[in-house]
Length: 238
Length: 238
DNA sequence: GTCTCTTGATTGGTATACCAATCTGGCGTA
DNA sequence: TACGCCAGATTGGTATACCAATCAAGAGAC
Image (cartoon, rainbow over all chains, first blue to last red; front, top):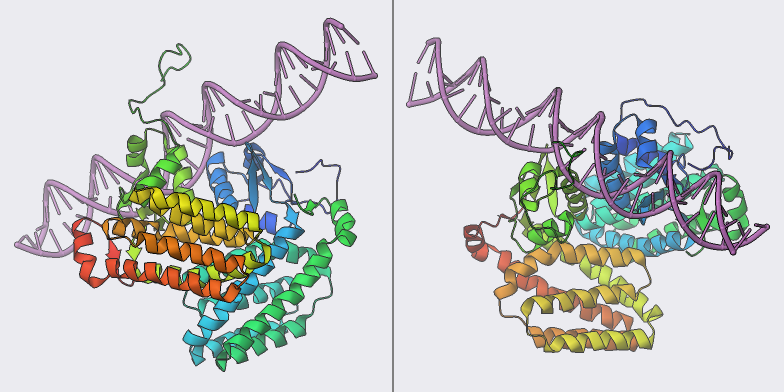
């Protein structure tokens, strides 16, 4: 944790509550920026913070490292910094991954599955909560990936969503193009139902690029200072 | 134990094997089929086998689980079975991943990098050792991935190679189309140098399919009995 | 003979003690 | 003042003791 002198929000740490396991809680803390990008982590400090011993904490750290949410440099651990370059690479990767998903989903998806996905989509249209809406967005892309019938693509999409989740969280307050996203999702679904794979892939690409550009702006030079002031470690290259 | 008194002897241990860490050794044991697919693993048994305590072993198991080399079912751990379906999915995934690599490598690779890759390729032509030759094959695809300048694609290729390594090991004794692979690799490199991305992607696809078909045959019904006789857990669906 | 229940062994999960490497701060010297 | 060096604190790495859940084997009833 950065020096306690930097107060942005009252960080609700140091609550040795029980309930979810150490991994889930630590992961949530990172993804919601409760633990800031670049922040140094000490197993002993987490011991007090999470109310468990180091053994489950080490397990959590190992898992989070595999997810790319924390990094080791030498012996010390820190929350992975937000790199603009990395986010852009994630989106570049995503275009190819979701292109593949589109093609395979066209081959394998049943009308029933597509209909169910549409239901999920429409249900999300009502919910007002921004966080819940983000959830819907992730679910859509994940469920779509499952239609590819390829576990590696599912994992790839899962990884991507994890990697960019913190960036999405940062722009949580930004004006969200919510209905627009719903329309785009529906459009993608329709194209897949019609087996128009290339168009679906293209739509997914454009959909992702929209989000990418918003995120890139949020992480860009112009906004960097504001994030830094909140303690977020945003890196250009590194 | 009374460790305070004398530094004379380590607290425990009769196992001499000290060199590489538990993770590397366990990983190697799995990939070389020294630990068979489907085999049950017990942390305590590994403790004796590897000559370390459970702490580093648990770390190793966590990492290997993230790599998909071992799986948890309930509380027990076992080496991931070889599933024909999974191998086929890995190859399907690979086609998309390497297609993406081809396109991006065409955009980013420098002539110098391509030349260096060709050198590695030619050097591998001499080595007679089948295992070393496999190594070259993996290195080629990994180095190629790096030319994409996308860390996610690099990781994806790394993951794929890990996933199919055991299957490759099984066919280690099969007649290897060695010079053929060298020619294909060189051909791919040439196409990328010429910025003919689509053709390079197609060549990579055909190259991978060649290997896939050999592996699929090795894991197929016909060969299943032989593998089972050797103790390998080969699964059709499940 | 077989089915079930009990019991002991084995397992993964957790907490903790110890060590060596690293970091840090402060003191002494040039 | 600036530099460097040393001691104490802190850290991650390791070993190990303990627990609860699970599994397996054996005894006993029918």
